[in-house]
Length: 139
Image 1 (cartoon, helix red, strand yellow):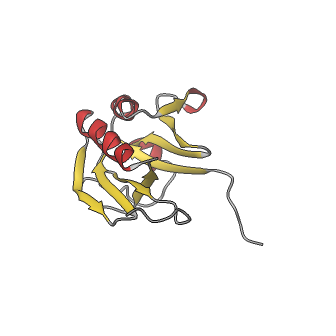
Image 2 (image 1 turned 90 degrees about the vertical axis):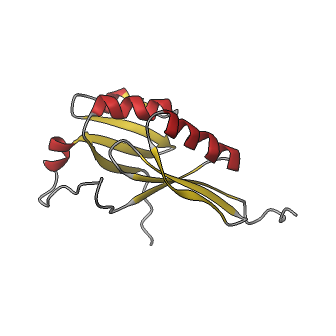
């Protein structure tokens, strides 16, 4: 039998928790106050999908390896979906207005459209919309 997770929690180190909360709030994300204190917050990405934003010293307490410098290295790209192409563009506009930066040009593959950005700590995010494969092709 295959393992199916009930939830996904992605842990991300951040330099300034309050600044990160402000940034992601401007993008429209909400936070679960039950899991928020001076060391961490739980950002709600979707149903049963969360990002735990942990201040760097707290994040370091969970690992034995050196903490990567996300301004210089990349280990992961966090990809989230939007309900439409315009939803992708709207979120990326909020990113830029909130102080994030675009990391590459928009990608349009016909059936899929995406834009990528870096958050305030240099973590890479990709926002994309993919057409339903069961839908009739537009054209």
